[in-house]
Image 1: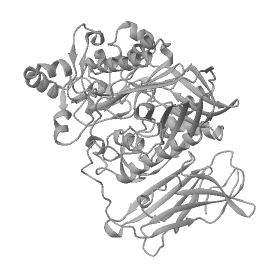
Image 2: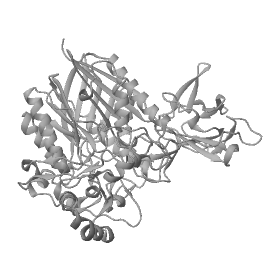
Image 3: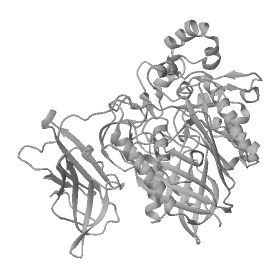
Image 4: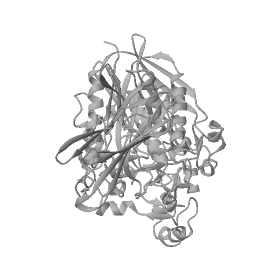
Length: 626
């Protein structure tokens, strides 16, 4: 039997109202609706007894708890080593799905409903991909994309040796890589890897959005119905889509248009690739590394000496945020932070020389290691993975990797397995999360990325050492030690929503409050209910319908780029009511006809529906109120 491959996709959208978004870490960025739904796209591969599963999730970060619970529900044959679950790193998705408190800090605690939606959706996508397994041909292609990323940490990048900088003359990684899955000459699935942050949407946005990578996937799937396409990350740690080096300042000054344009550029670059057929050789290795106490051998440290990582500590620069994509907290800045630097260098480091060797010159701010002993704050034991699909090697890393750090990891693996460096990718945001990984040279600059390299300046050498061990084992056909996985304790703080739904005075749930339109947009307002009563995973809160043959045909829902679903509370306490606003930006190609907008809501007592009266639409509508 030759290679089999299958594809599957499922909804993983969490709570669309009053749930803190993960990524920017802003308390005020609470979900208030949906612009685009979030999806997991799964790709299964089998060759005889060996199987691999790659799942690309439109999520801010990947949680070890999610991975653990997904693995427990997969069909037989998909072991931990053979499954890579990675995130696209949108910053506009609901949070609260971690077993470590730092990532639930703006969500009111652990959110069971969001967590369940993510796990259920990933399992559903994986099961669909497994059921879809059939003989297939794989093709691998590389190209370049140079107008979708910029280096947001150039000062740190410039500290790297000239030989490394020469590999990236524009200080960006332009490589775009495509794996095509074909059956009988027809494209059925595709995975693209390209390094740019999924931060075209700013921290002012509160609508759930899959951002530029999600747009790229939906754009390709709309252009080629039936094909499953995913746009995954590589070493995007210092790559930003905000080309003019400020939040929301991409190709334009509009965050929605920036999302569309950066997504379109990724889609067009990927769709133009075809590539050569590759053999379906599959292999996998995975180990858990305790990054808080790894001894790094001289051949990886770069200075000919043995060094040791330390317990995780966030630097003051980490709290400054990435200014190009979204500033952090007041009182902190990239680079020097005099108060924290002075405390660290004059008080802490003289008393702890081993900590100084691992963490200096970082201005220590949040000692996550000691806090972990009292309450799990960040993960310390982390998975490092290596997958092989023919000539393609994917290094699964639970962190955000800068482009030069990724280059060193790729070269490490390529030199051992004998692969072309272009065919080795550092796939960040995979299987867990541990913030950033910079080179030791970049670390010394203590920009945002260096301040967020929790385990210190020897973290990248430690990961290169681990990746080298996986590569040697794969080359030699030998097993590796699994290591000790992180023990995940049940989350202490669990979110509880307060208040109940009530209709507006004198109104019923689903009543239409108003409908208005312009030359390009229709907006309808309804008496609503809290979206958290039913997440409608795999379903929709809205529908735009066109009258056809005496019935109504859906032409858009809340997963479409052309629609937005906005929720707003009215009043407080037990009598709190809701208003739902649905907007349809009418695509230019929309045919004339009769249309209506429907809203699907839920109270504690069951579902209800609101429907506008039909309205006529043509290509040159008048400005009027319906």
